[in-house]
Image (cartoon, rainbow, N blue to C red; front, side, top):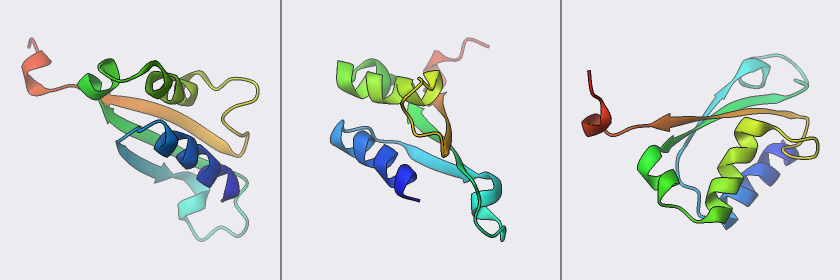
Length: 88
């Protein structure tokens, strides 16, 4: 849980706003799950207009570098485009 809180703290510090979707064994009745699986849903225009720090914090969820986020967090990001961006 501490690793998840550390990831959230970095996002709060960088003014990242979005919705977190939890999944995996962490949200089941499994005793002592080994990791937390989650996805950040963020509006594309918020990300595009955000600071370099904000974009970097979100990018780490996708890139999963060697040191961040913590190994106990299986992360990703999903971008939500406004309807007017759909060309279909």
